[in-house]
Length: 365
Image (cartoon, rainbow, N blue to C red):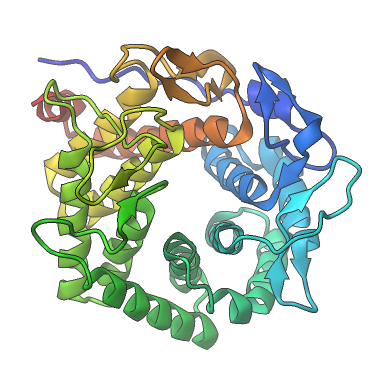
């Protein structure tokens, strides 16, 4: 019987290396932060989510300073005259010109919603609630697929913790819009609503599954699960390990790009599978979570570890020649999110006396 892939103690070592008094820096050269690229809202939003996950293991006092720094960054990023979050910030603290991506709007709203749902500091929850309410009118208008999904998941977190009428209206609007978008796909040949698979592909699928549960929509849940099944099968090597779409992407009718594989793909699939497991209780989704986690630890196309668990770091991807040795913010945060979700689900199963090893057998099939 297979043994579960090892867990590791929480390490914030590399997170601390990448972070200064302002926020986490976007990029690194090897393990050394590269200040030339400054900071971005996307990564700060993810860092705030990591703080919220780490409070379960380390306690609130251990993460409070970091969580407040990240929330203040998001508050500073919110440009009240336009109702949108700015994205890029230089190391001198100035915001850089240019229209921010819709993805950065979505990631900010997701992190703020998660803060409202799980932060242990009532003052922080209050601050996050005000910011969420301010930003929601602009955020609900996003049209990019992944941005819609992130805002929807932020609304879901809000509705489960501190429901408001405006959050419910936005949630319903985004769920209906996302569901309509996925109905455009071909259920058999190409169920994806776009002409190609690009990045963080499982995120919109996770949003469909979560919204289908919340609104008790069988059709939305069914669509989400079917597309997730397709993503899982399409990205599972015949030998049984995860082989995510590389950043050369996968166009309809073309060949799936094998490299460069990014940590964000593994973590997005892990989170979508977690939502599917919660919705259905089916072991195959639990096994998909373990498969995505194992990708970080060397169960991948090159049999090379992508994460550095002892430092809480991750390499920036898997290339044809090996790992990309840079250890930037996105990759590191994806590892930290993945390991905490696996830690939580295994802990839950230990409480329910469910054998993880049995699931690892299913993951290997």
